[in-house]
Image (cartoon, rainbow, N blue to C red):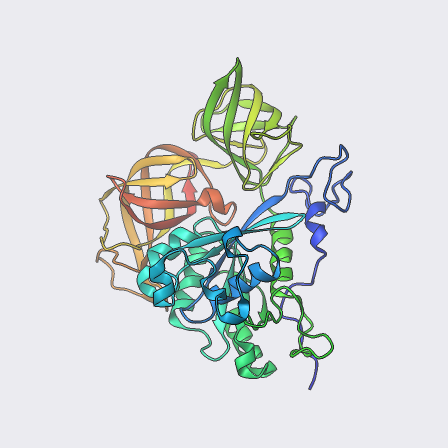
Length: 454
């Protein structure tokens, strides 16, 4: 039997994430030791990286997540007595009795897995087609995806739908976990077939295929430990484990993020004013000048604070922090960004929206769009095209957009808003499309923003 080519990106040292600085892509961060500490001896801030695990029901997604947490020592405190041989891995994250009795995930659940360089938020989303809204809400803040496919069942309709939803939510890359390899006798040809299917489908959906890993979750094969060692069941697989593939994804995506800080509010205490919010993308450092959008103005970051901690040397993607700033004061909902790399400000969006609720929508409807910066009123001006999501089959023009249908739309807002095209900065390019009363109709992504000069 010939050695198989690796189906995942080249393995990178887990400590490598500590040497990647979003301000200087690909450049080593000076002054950090192997333990991830800076020159002052403080722990270097770890990046938060959210990964959505998606796939058809019964393809082994929950079992795989349970095994990943078990093998990396990240079990929740109330599950430390779990016996993986007793079949409890699949229910590790299921908090509802209905989920355990029904043998499938009903709602989205999250778990945290921390390394010296990264804080992974693992999102287990439901696989049933009827739970599309739950899937969308769970994956709405994902940075990357792991698509789970049973080696026997191969790609299913819900697999296709989930990949299209991930792209719609601004996810760029997906890693494939081909599960239940033990039940297929660890057949390399069966793995190759599924890996090729998923790679082709991901590319068709506009996603970057980041590789495929053959796994056996019940035994832990290639989940966090390799299965190609002496006596291992998969000597033909030379690529990284699933966990190593996730680490490589986190390192690679950290190199392409423009710095974006969204203001959640302004607090004043003891005569000190702090701008509080979230780093939605990139890195923010003390001493950096940032421009305020919309409205103009500039400010300089004097100090970065987080409750109960000493001042931070930097804040990374996903960090909720307070900034002490000098200069102009931003309002709630404003975006702080480098003066030479600003978000776009406009009131007309060309976007794609997925209807995940029972209410159809049509042009002329008053609407509310919710972004990371807040809620903004507007009107649905046009629906240009509609598709059925599983196969992207074009649908008849002129009809309202129904459940599970994807639509290309034009939205006119009541006032200019600072946002991004999703391909440039996914967190600022995502939104929730709502009725005028705030009832969520479905998620959307911005494809183009018409500015005053457009």
